[in-house]
Image (cartoon, rainbow, N blue to C red; front, top):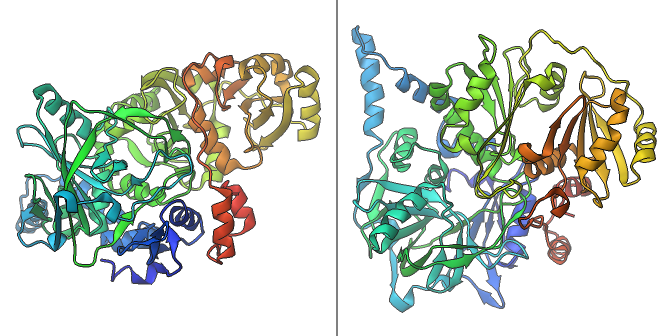
Length: 596
């Protein structure tokens, strides 16, 4: 597969440190207009040179996705849809076509092979040291080094269910790896079986090999279905697995590196902090960990890693593949769903846009509730629905204008449900507000259009009643529902300021409050606000709509710890610049994406 990806790979010969330097350069690369896969040939640490090169940003762009998946993503989705809708064949051509589809299912069954490439080198006992791998420390405040692209293989206590997921893995020492099994994830469910039975749980981690296996580890498959089967369906050939040396688990035979061991469910260790895909650090918390018993590798292994943080990053393309391929499965629970999109600056679970074919009043609400009850869609915090007349979902500017022209306060639904364990803004951990907006076209009961003022004039008016307001920026003033972003000095709550400025309601329609620096940066503004709001606390539906996108504290009745932003280390950026390694990205883009 790497041979096929060669045109998209940029090799870095300059020795760079596994601590911050390599991940910082990959972080910048992912934000370019045409990102490349990066192969770091000389990873180092404190004078030590690693024998294993580091590969990052392997899901670099849409062209690379097509190479990895072997075909267009929409074609894969169509094949899945045809399988779902398959009817008993009547004619000979129909029978032949049906046979072809059933044969594709046959390819999903994994085959076990011996003498696998991933076991060319075998290190057991004291020879199996995590310090021999070029594992990265990505961010300055991270709790240590983390494996970020490991396929974590587990199975149920009775052996009937096999699972693979992609979880971050903190290195504590040569023999212990943290297992960030969030409470809602399949591995966590299997873990509790072993804990209840007080038995050791086998764990194996595969790194590298065919990158499609890595994507499959992230795929939101229904519980109990082995994600590797999706590999076989997409590739059109049976996945080849091999039995591990020290446990009964099976991993891809072509993996570059395999770490084998077990988890004692009675043992926990503090994990984190970690600069996560939300763009915030996730805070310290106890999680299970793995005891390393063996490490096996290919003859010439490569260490795969990814970097997460503020968008856009590699997960943009991994998420896009998930979005396209799983659309047919979502349609089985919401048949009138036409399409959906997960903007990467909404960090996927914070915002979805959905296009539907509404057939009756409340149809959008019905589909909202349906999606909030489906697998990983249940973690989505904010969902906006439009109809067939709307522009394409990824034409964000035109779509936003359409939404604002169709928006009415009465078509907002605020509900309560589960949220992702990484969510930092919810009123209580794991449970928080859900916001649904029905922006399908219909007869409008409200034809009010605000008297839009110039930004400076509006700022002057607002400051006359609230001196803590520092700046104002209005967006989409040509629509029925302009958005007014207010930056304020947080010496009182946004709700208090909102109550004061409602007297200027003839000039306002939707007001968003922030206490950070994104007022002139709509891309990062969406990132900040969708991260920071819990709709039960932070959305106020009145004659004016108020949204509190500020960082929360005790002024808001927020009693949990608020995490810091994920930010680059200035000295590392300067060193990379001086080495001439930062190119193809402008200073303006570096500022936009908050690199500098």
